[in-house]
Amino acid sequence: MADSPVVLLGVTGGIAAYKAAELLRGLQKAGMEVRVIMTNAATQFVTTMTFETLSGFPVRRDAVNELRADSRITHVEDSREADIMVIAPATANTIAKMANGIADNLLTSMCLAFNKTVVVAPAMNTNMWEHPATQHNVAVLRDRGVFVVEPGAGELACGVYGSGRMADPDSIVAEVKLRLQVQRKRDLRGLRVLITAGGTREPIDSVRFIGNRSSGKMGFALARAAFDRGAEVELIEANVDMPAVPGVRQIMTPTAGEMHAEVMKRLANTDILLMAAAVADYRVAEGPAGGKIGKGRDEWSIGLEATTDILCDVAAHHEGQFIVGFAAEYGLEGLDRARAKMEHKQLDMIIFNDISRADIGFDSDFNEVRILTRDSEVLVERAPKETIAEIILDNIAQAVRARRGETMLPA
Ligand code: CTP
Image 1 (cartoon, protein in one colour):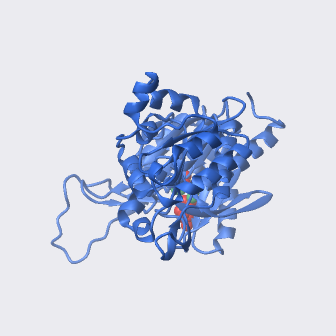
Image 2 (cartoon, protein in one colour):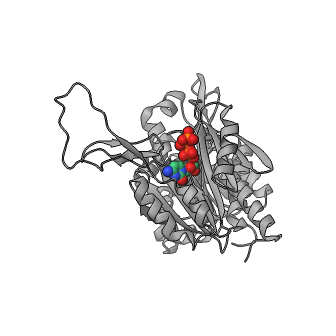
Image 3 (cartoon, helix red, strand yellow):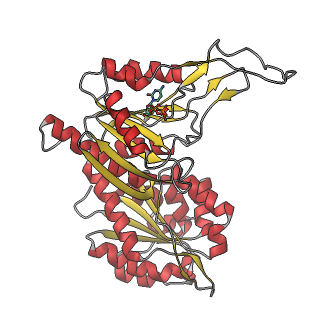
């Protein structure tokens, strides 16, 4: 990365495009060099001249014209030079195209060619923002690792009061600074991190299973964040419906038994284990029946047997690895249970989350956790799972450093 980080600022066609000028200034004040790409619709709201004058660089807009002008493949070359891409304002239309991989203008082509951090600041009318299609597209982008700066509520240009107003430029600058800091951190370089994610499913027959509601989002956010910080990451996943994480080796383990085997196989070559998966505590005692069990009975009892507790087995075999468990507990009274689990399973850290709350946790993009160690407790207030992942890794990196008596992790 160059001394001054290079930001590609994508401006799309919404009234908030005028605020992108203030954002550009804010990014420059924070020490970044900004190159602007506008969609044709954006140029209806603000002229290219505004951004050219402020940024000191030509504004890029249409792929065909660009190719004629300097005969370079702009969307590939510019994306190589930049450290981060910010799309602000991002219209519902551009968000939909990004979610579907459509590349019908220079900006959306760049989105496909760009393989580093992307930050999106949506701005649109409240109904468009709340529409299930937009919410779905935003969720797809988040799952793919795009950072979304949520729009705020206020009076919109269309006269109504509601959410959809682009986040204020200062908070977008703050998000970009945070993401660049993370890119530069590389504080897990040289460390091998093993992460489990998702929820195991224990088959009853060929059709049915005993499962749980874990989506895998927290584990995937941790995997992405650990990779960005320089770790060598392996992700053991159970039934997760999310796009692959670039740079991370993924191993599918649908059941608790398979997950157990894959974790134990890798334990000796692991420095940090994060057991974020919801592992079934029981499976069908006599093994799953082949085919499909028919009904034709008034009652049905299924005998269950305990699965191996992976963390307990890890505790019996590990040699100095840093071991992190997760405790999904109902209500704050679960904190003591989480601490007891940390003792019992000989964990270095346990991440507590309260599953009695509907606004965080299962299937949500948000979480609120308490990071517990033997001698500390850190509350991480409700935030996107990506932010929670960063803070968990900050705490782990610090604890690993302290254990090694190092001020810096190995280069
Ligand atoms: N875990 C595990 N192996 C299992 C079950 C759980 O390693 N067979 C791990 C989870 O990945 C998580 C932690 O243990 O990191 C959760 O602890 P656990 O005691 O299983 O929690 P619950 O089942 O939610 O709690 P309890 O049964 O005590 O109510």
